[in-house]
Image (cartoon, rainbow, N blue to C red; front, side, top):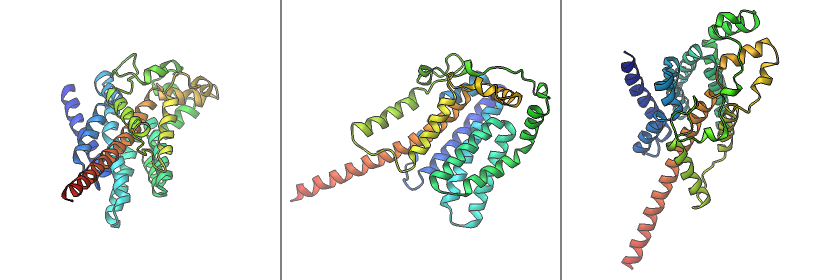
Amino acid sequence: MESTFIIWSQVITFGTAWSMFHCIFKRKKKDWISLAGALVYLLLPYHVYTVIQSGDRLQTLIWMLVPILTASLVKMLDTEKMFWKTGYGLTAVLSLGIIGRLDGVAALTLLFLICVGGICRRQWQYPVIGILGMALAYPTYMTWKHWLFGGDFAESGLEYTSIMEQGYSIGGLFSTYFYRNGNPGMGILLLGILLFLLYQSFVKGIKICGRNDHIWLGAAALLTVMSLRYFPWDFVQRLGNWSLGLVTLIRTPAVFFGYAQILLCVWSIEKCGAVLQLTDRTARMWEGTVKKNGEK
């Protein structure tokens, strides 16, 4: 039964990830890049760890829903017809609401990223969708309120605990292993893609970062810093009983690097597609120039 769930969940996750990248690359007609992006998403070390090592079904479902949420947000902006725009918006709200019911920390992290996306694209709809999605998940946060401010944290089934030591070391972030000491590293695929982009930028002189890319990269950097064992989670927990309980609900700061991996995956695959398209166009122009000179 467990193996059946894993197989079907990963088939569906691959499909939703392909749909996400297909929406991103729809104008470029690079279906193979969408397939490659879906494969990279599926093989992100934190995703592999979630599915196989931890066996957390709720987190597996969240990794399945994140591409649906992302694709809906992208399509909502690219569709002019109000009927479809509304439909995609409602799909995004529903996806975030379900994620919030499964994991309140995940929904808050995604709300932050949705607001970042709204700032990057200058779209006021994004924060509104985020707020509506969180409203659907209000039972989760009402329960949190009862636990954190009602003095009934014992009902959560968790014990107050420090989470700092469960964070990443600096070297652990760049581990090419799927799983090491409870914290999956970046993995060889994502690391290789990022190194490829660095090579194209600093050696080939190709402009990689666009106008708002520093905001996306800044968000990924913030999530990465929050995942480190050096982030002052102990100080945050000393702010009061509510903060002690709230940080305990996070369970491990390593989860934030999982979302940073998603952000870096989407950004890097999109940039790889742009670089390869530019390279292909340059090669065709060069070939055409050579052919014209040969005819002369």
